[in-house]
Length: 277
Image (cartoon, rainbow, N blue to C red):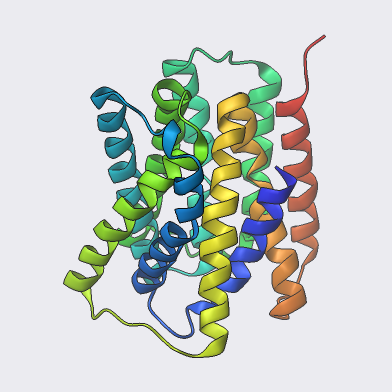
């Protein structure tokens, strides 16, 4: 989980750099396309573990489409909203996971878990509190909330129906499907564009190889072996890590409210991970 937090935390900084060169939809389309290429060795090595039954393939394809729609929704919202506010709305995902896991996975709802999820989310809000006043029920807000909800749906769906499939196999299937879907969406909404600047190339390679191929595979592995509430709440550390990396590489300011946010996120993650005696 620490590896995922560090990779995804730095990924926000890299994404901000990449967005100086292409639009969000072009960025995510190219990211998934290159992630698909990066996972070709895994496909070659693990091809014998590909599902043999049509039912599993149908579930994989459905999960891939929902994941692609969720990513498209998030990045369309990001196109019209600030990154800070987008982070707050994207990380409503653990709130959705908490509710859905109780309904569809039978995970126990306990007071420490409720407090942990609530404190963790409040920590994200505290980090970006200056953006909260800008929050309004706009179309961008709805796109971002929809993206967070669909991210939660894919977590629950994988845990319930696809946990028997290796995480790298899931990504080998869902990245190409997502890339095709998002390239189609991008071509309809705007012009397809690739920037040959070396900074952009290094940025997109980081996002594709580490941010998607590596971190997303680790993420699914964690979802597979652990309670989804624990994994999703622990991901609230990503916005905190993103702010730290932003302060180092983008000269963003860490305010006193951000320190409160770090403390709340840490307390929330502790409470959710705490085992009852």
